[in-house]
Image (cartoon, rainbow, N blue to C red; front, side, top):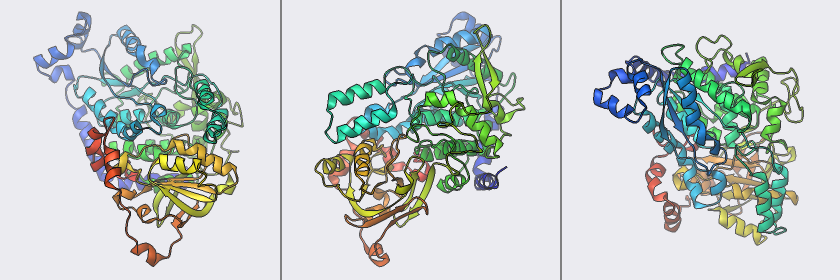
Length: 610
């Protein structure tokens, strides 16, 4: 086992001793109760089963059959979630074949960041995660289920479902993905058209044609953003059936895996091989997820989300843990924006199973963990390295060992010949606070940027300055008052094309912000999630136009090159009343005022419930 992996895991375990003890004690109290239908009053039971067919009522009440709950994030605005429409019927049918019963416990909201990018609705996006977690809790609060299946894929949805599930840690839980859409216009070609549009070289019609060719059918978007990073991390945590993440929604194997997930959930109940999610997700499991993220150059959003996920299981992690792991975890995958391939090519090259196997062989993952394969499974995380295919009858999945070599070494490499000896994410610190940067796609000659700052308080102002030619120089673009307290920490995805254009012209360009970038952020160096945020008194509010800022991804430095005494004496710039009013009103933003007031910092997971 790698010494750094052991040291970081031990530190997390020690830091979390008391909170994890309390969590497991609560889990054991909940698990020790009689089953729901047996401990509830008659009126409660009658309400719970009133709409079920008579045979199901008999199974639940008299035969004490296992009863599964479904928490679904289905809607057909999200292409990734559209396939979930028919899943409850399939799950119910499969459960009936095994003498069990099923109810849809509840639905949770699921918004598409691709629809809301750059628009006011994006200011609800981060907080939708905790709203989803609360909705999951409402769904499971009926407290009648022996196990649960979770239907969700995209950005805030999986972290929200997982946070909610971990607050019901006594339940066995299986996550059921739906797979990516087929490959369309390549991500590189799509980005070129976006940059051409930013320069006025093509119009709206050409841009819409390109976007529609990239996003064209059911399934997850094919770049390696937050949604597909979610799927990689769930595989590394053992919360999916092995290899389930990136099977196309319409592939016959998809239905076979969905049915197998039902059977596996039934296997994990108290009656058989009890394996609750709160026991699966321990310190080792969380570290495995962190390592998987780093080894694949995954989404920066997970430096927020997985901090919150860990806290839901009584485990405390921070960005220093990520940074120390990143120094020893090699980069094994190049998937857009960390390369030119999409997730379908990643899957064809070996996918998550290949990555997990290589990391295990390097001693960079904990093998001795529980997974949804059950407490009786002796293979631990090794079970997640196998590839599912259909059996000879085409009815059920069977699992095989992966080939020894990558199917495409330009996309996926072995631990012996990685793309880089270190991971794709780094911690930055200095007199501007603490931030993170995704370096896996940034050219080596752009890892150090030192240039005057130009400060904005919203995306629109920066875009206007770009169009007016005011940024045609070496520049550190600073967009502040974009943190969780200020406006919900939206992704600043619309900044990417103009910044890429400036960089393409040879200027030294960087972004510094207390907001987020998309999981698709790439080749422009971006110090993001700056904490503390400007509204909370963070030093980003001390910065002035023209101050020289140094961003050094190598040394981990984020500093305003201002004399120390002058820096300390400066007053903090505050948001104007007009800015506060704009951030808090319209499109339901008023309803989230309490979350903005209570939210923790980005490094604390931007949680609103602690």
